[in-house]
Image (cartoon, rainbow, N blue to C red):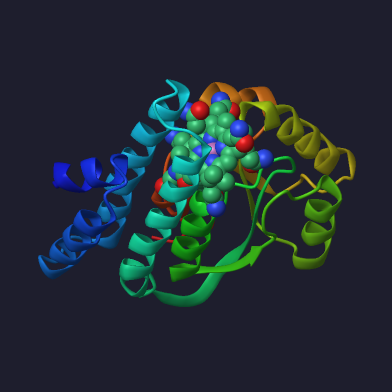
Length: 209
Ligand code: B12
């Protein structure tokens, strides 16, 4: 599928990107596949930032362009079941304000029949604990894009456990720099690479086909 889309995202070429998203929509390419390509483009943006080819202004611009593209396909993501499978509490861990990935996960989970409680970004451990007590979720998701926030996730998960709230609760983590090693380090039940992975994991957990 569209290398043009990946390049347009990586090069922050808004007009090509909008035209390409519209073309792919017209061809009937599924929304999640389009998001996947945009994410690949974002990874290149991240690499260019690391290599000092891009600066903070380009990171900010990438977020704006990504959101514009996501808005174009938003309606397609939103076609789904009525909520019935269970409750999913989700946030971005404290110290971290990245929310694009989190928002995709909450949209996709909600479209796949989960009641979603979105705690936002820079979420404290106390806010997670309060939400778990109030909403009694089966699954909690923590998004984290910064390696410097890994210890925050670890602290948050061990505090949830210390509060006696871990029984019967699964905790998923995700976000660019996370992997299975991160999940093991912070004490999560699983690492999910994409929003769709979180749906599959949660449906399996709830015994939903
Ligand atoms: C856009 C962006 C920003 C924007 C964010 C805007 C916003 N509203 O979110 C802005 C400009 C604000 C920003 C700021 C910063 N950023 Co930034 N940013 C990025 C960038 C380029 C893209 C992130 C993104 O949106 N990707 C697209 C989404 C769709 O992907 P995703 O988040 O990974 O989510 C998908 C999956 O991972 C998964 N997922 C995500 N979370 C979860 C959670 C669960 C539970 C599950 C199941 C799945 C899941 O589902 C999503 C859909 O499939 C990344 C580079 C990268 N490769 O990620 C750097 C990056 C994350 N940023 C980085 C840095 C350093 C910063 C700053 C510190 C820069 C600075 N000097 O100020 C600040 C930090 C601010 C803070 N305290 O949080 C570094 C982090 C390096 C590191 N190792 O920690 C990165 C990796 C760039 C780099 N390579 O250097 N950034």
